[in-house]
Length: 374
Image (tube, rainbow, N blue to C red):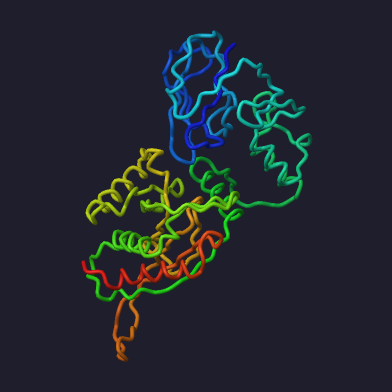
């Protein structure tokens, strides 16, 4: 029996979630035939078969989360091996035996255990001091799932819940993990200020104008257009301004990236924004379009809210939030006039940038907005 292990589906991602199987045990497949649709933090990817042969076991079912390097498909015949480049990343394979008592701890690493449980279930149990020996598994052959552990925890704590509970899957699950990572490893500070945009026409493309303001600010104060390695304490200033654009969707938050935004005209920026909105909505956005951001824009004011404490996406060091603009009384040369104010919130990683650098950056954003001619 030959085992195909879940490959790295891009940028060293540690895990992926099964969305849909295209094959079942007993099916004959050929090299490069799609086996399963997997969802990562970046995109939905079809994983092709590296072998020709008969499917013996499909490891996992829809919504199960598999670690990179854990068994994905077992074949009854050895078959021919496909080009390893047929899937993004490496396709590690092994001749080591797999049985129901093994649990993958890391990539292509198995460890014997007396309890059969999903990796996510083990992690949750460890974090919450739950004895897996007391948990009843509902999976195949008594395999303990994450839902089993959570159900056991609720019963142990004798807490009465109203309504239905839901385990996070796909983009929402990856978003939750990314937010936890940001909270644990970044030292965020948020500064807020208002920009007077009274002079702007009513139909001004605010999102494009904000991106142009970020580009101008990155030129005036490059420290916030950067990447930072918190473990090695290494900062890298980046020449290109790669703006991550927070896009809300029913399935969770996506952050597509406009690469080298400083080289694009206002119309090209708008075209790219519209393109990303469509590709996010129909889940066709490429993984490469969500990589390499150096700074993020969150224009949450299009929905509601004035100020916020936006969350930084590592390894970048800053995110600019724009709240809903409002009518207000502004003072110019000692005279009060009716005007329009745009609230801005800049969160930066204080390990990588000083307060002076951050305030200069925000000041440059405001200066660009208040002097813009459209």
